Image (cartoon, rainbow, N blue to C red):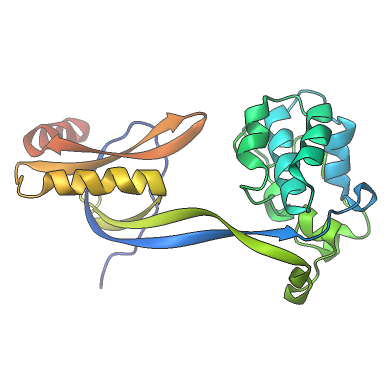
Length: 237
């Protein structure tokens, strides 16, 4: 029976020898309301962020959630940025990275505890205070735009936001197949490394995760087989 695929635990810096089995392309789409949701229709959590609940605690999480919410709730960028800038306590880059480019977190995610940005759980921030309508919706966008079924999504548009790639690789350290999600730019870098590896039997591909702007991102490099074998034996003994 084949080994079950696993997703690697994001341990920073740990190097894993891998062989690429295949790469699947995935297009990520974002639903955006055709008409801007009125502030009176915003859910309690978003109203709490706008009201400044909690002060600077969780400021990056709150700024990211608000930017992504306004982007999907149909607000024009200029109006959204004016509101966001008036209440957010984070740098403008958070708005640029999240508005119209990222999905607003659903309630399931928001209700989780978080160690901090870029995780968007807000259970520790006192913002999730459900009213009588919250249980009817999946998340803040659905609440504000009154999306209760897929048919209701016809009141908006769907636009492409990014291309992602799911790498299927064999983890030689565990003897299992693994899955690694990478961006379009990272896919280009991986393809170049694969081409460089062609015909070089004394070298292998190594996967690791490094921190980039607060997030652990995948990184592939080429390593000498003998050096990698020594490192693996050193870890074992």
